[in-house]
Image 1 (cartoon, rainbow, N blue to C red):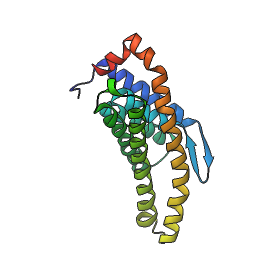
Image 2: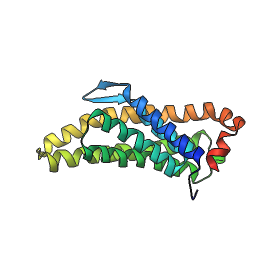
Image 3: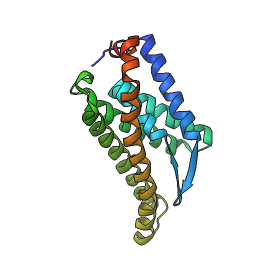
Image 4: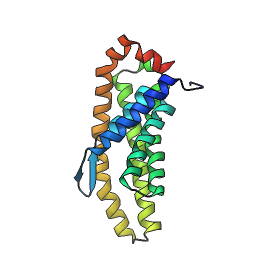
Length: 185
């Protein structure tokens, strides 16, 4: 694992965080929640930048969206942590074997792990808030969890398909331009 961040890596991380933020702006309602493609970019951050930097890009971009959208500090911090975990797990699973060995199956596995991490954390947050913060009865808590689980799984499914496809589509260009080596340096 890298011991420090180069200016190139910091810039690339900031660009990925900005992409997460911008893609989150384009969302549409579905079954009481919102569906968007930001999770795919969060996973892509983990794939491209590795666990720490990819997690930071995913967490910062998503938390920035929540902060600008007017969410309270607690929700912004929860988003920062959960999206960081998503990018981190995805990057860790992929980069633990070395990116050069990352064929589509390994990339897909890393995205499934990252997306599953986020869905679990989001459902945990939903459960804890509804039960312990709002004090709803258990039937209401479970109904809310299930209603949020369906669009979360749709978001996760889209992200798990889109991120590896996009990565492997741009991989030849990243290799030929030398950007892939600079990201790993």
